[in-house]
Image: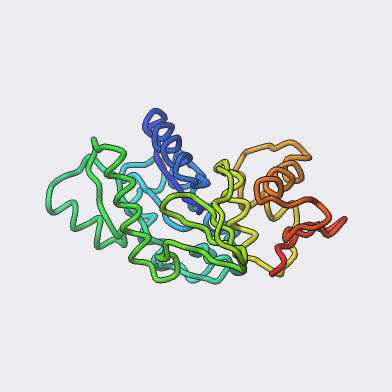
Length: 243
C-alpha cells in the first residue's frame, strides 16, 4: 500500500514515516503543499490513502483537499489496476486547530477524518485502518490469488497445498510489498522500472540488481526455485506471477 504524507515538521514527518514503514506502507513524504500538488498533477503514482497537515508552506492542507476533490484526473486509489482518474482518495487531516469551527472547515474541504496534534501513533494507525475500511476498493483484509493468500492484518502469507496450508516463512516488508504487487497484477508482465516506481519511494536510488535480488529471496521463502516458480522471469522484460 502506498501513502502520501505532506507534513512540514521534520521530526514529526520522520516519526510518522518510520511507523508507517513497519506497517508495510510505501510512503512518499513532501514538506510543502505546492510540491505535493505538482507531483499529484502528473498522475504518475497511485495512493491508497493520504495524510495532510493543515498548515503547510505553499498550498495548505485544506486547499490540497479542495484541489483533489475538484480534480478530474491523475490522483487514484491503488487497486492493482491501471490508473483511473479518481478524486475520492481517503484523506486524514493533521492539525493543531481543535475548535469546532475549524474541524468543520477541514471536513468540508474534503478531508475524511481529522486528528488533532499532539496524537499517539496507535491512534493514527487506527484512523488509517478505518479510512481504508470505508473505501470499497481497499477494504478487504485478504488478497487471494491462486494458492496464495495475503493477510493485511497480520502481514502473513499462506500457501495452499493439496495436503493442507503452509505459512510462508516471515517476509520482510519489501518482500511483502513485492508479492502483493505481483498478486494484484497476476498473469501480467511487470517490468523492473514498474516495480521500482511502485515499491520504492520518491527519491530512493536502489541498486541496479535490487529487484532481481528481492525476487530470488521471495522465491526462496515461497519454497520455489528459479526453474519451477510461480514467479516467472521474462528475460529482458520483467516478471510475471503465473496463476
